[in-house]
Length: 174
Image (cartoon, rainbow, N blue to C red; front, side, top):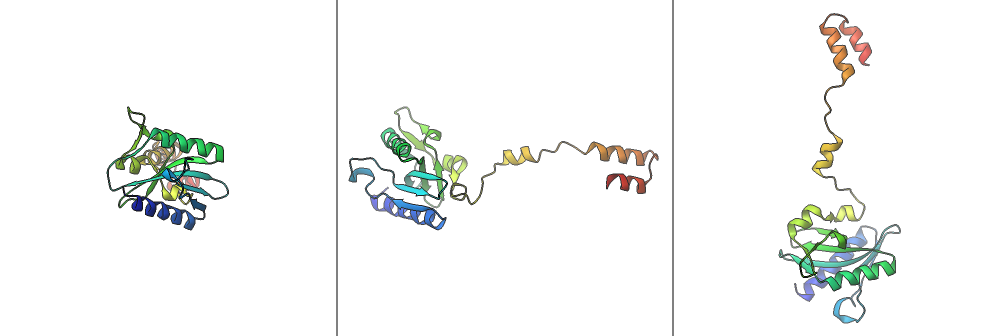
């Protein structure tokens, strides 16, 4: 990714966070411009504070060096922020990861594939508190069909056997 494209993506993230109600600043001195390792973006909404390393790609996996991630974690701890890696692939939204949730390569670097970002990353609305991601598995668990209500079955059975008439059943089921 070119430096200009990376700068543009960082500004895009800053503007989106600002529109979502965060106080936000880009650290243009991040990377090679200073000896101190700084995150690309600092953002907070009064309750949540983040130090974000922003990376983007046209579609290839995104790699971060172990040193980049360690520097982010170190800064975030000292600053009192949560470290996050912001990932953006072309024609996709931003996705966010805690550094501990990233795949570590054999060489000690970190990698995020596009499909991993989409499937496992925290999307922008969830990251900014505008929505909460719910998985199909969670929906299945919360709406688990445990079968028909036993009370209703007993009443219907009583009507079927002639022990109770329909009007009595309706009163019981109210």
